[in-house]
Image (cartoon, rainbow, N blue to C red; front, top):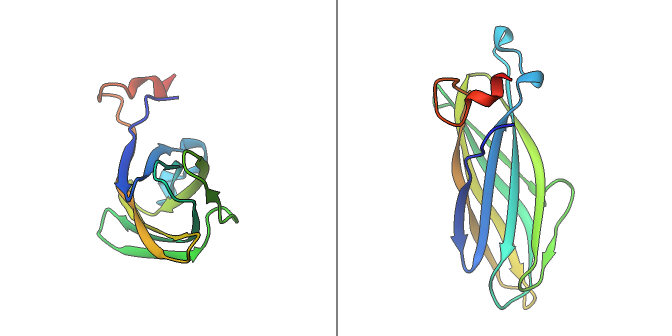
Length: 140
């Protein structure tokens, strides 16, 4: 594997960290198909129990074309996070260009019914470059 680049955003004492990974074995550059996995960790550092209700992603390819993805929960779940708890999942995103960006928000709800959005940090989807430090081991 590679040394991951991690992106983090904090909203209302809830941290969202994302680590993208290019999946060469699922990609087909000759057909303009590039696939990334991304691991997301949501950590509740606040005093309130919250539940993740929905997601809203904005995905941009290298041409600046935007794809919006909205829906309930993440990977079929709407996790409840008590203070100090975290939730982690892995998902994926295809692109038709060798690079792009993703970011967005999760809608959360407190036990008292207050709803608010937390930021998903915008992160880059870049093909591994063997000349770039920490990425050469992808060739092994």
